Image (cartoon, rainbow, N blue to C red; front, side, top):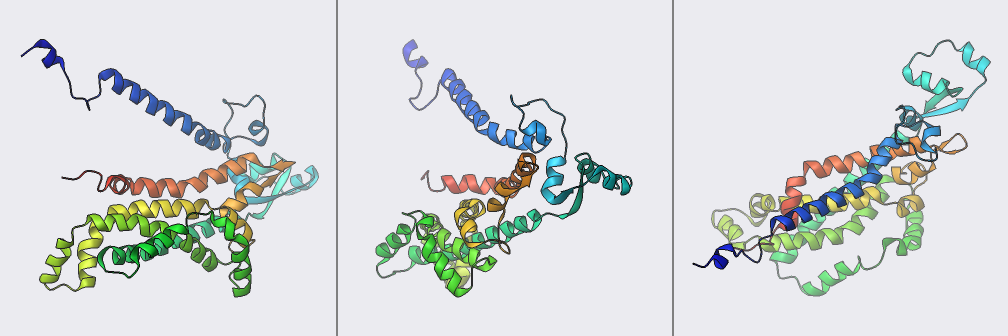
Length: 318
């Protein structure tokens, strides 16, 4: 065997230099994309003057004033009035009094945050539930005009949802669904269900029919075979679909701004209007944004294994 042949390597095998370059590019890209997130988190721990300092402060004295301002409403008072109140009873009262202010009550952020959780997870559950049933039907049954129906479902994603905002606004006002959690859940479900159907149909197609046929021969009904045989093998696809649907419902801004104003308002339209002294309270805005990111991060981390399987499902055939 010649020396040249022993030194040859597979076309698909990366060289050490190539692997190092790829790793450097991935790490560099990750660091660049993480910079805005890190800056938002750090801003949440700055004082209002430090948050708008120029040049921007990288080293600063951390404070929880932004989080206190996020969860409370405050009123400016005279020094004589503040002294008449006696010493502050809590650490957050002490922070507020340093600005010659007193806490007058809780803010509306907690309610808006809970609305986001109810609407986001509620619409995601409905979209994935309906999408799973529809995807199974399209994959396993002879549906008349199947291709036309699938194309029609896909066509609902071809234009931005905000393009139909005015008709939806008029319809919701007539039906009494404006500024209601039910109305927002139904709307986000309608937008996400087409995505869920198309994603999940691919996963159902990859599951051999022989599994269900064997279950039916063993005495299972069609519904039991779906529940005990097909559904467990769709977990990766369901997890991936749920994450995509939740990200849309969680971050959606335009419909939330147009169709809600108080009772069902979510966090996205509320966070940008947090007002402090002389304008936007940037530490409070950053604190709200940080807390707003947490559910998506936790949900994705919990389902990360299923998400990776879902993205690569069917990519390699034996």
